[in-house]
Image (cartoon, rainbow, N blue to C red):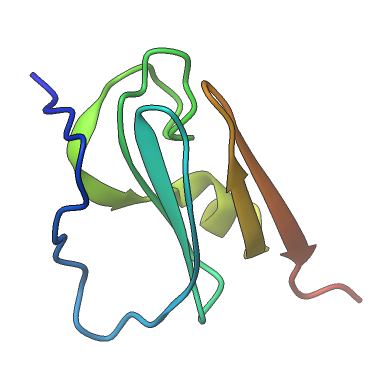
Length: 93
């Protein structure tokens, strides 16, 4: 069960995270941290949370795919059933 709230609600993120940006879709939310991580939560039926499945979550979860691909999230924009992320490729030779 995923709760859908019509009003803002407090959410606990790990203490060492500093939020640089946030975007809300129709039923999901995403934040980019100053460290370049992406956290998402809410309704995930269409995979818009970015966790490789269609599960929904009331808890913010880090999008591990970006980390494993060496990508730094710079900006996020949520649509009704989508999430767009501007990334920076880390490393390089």
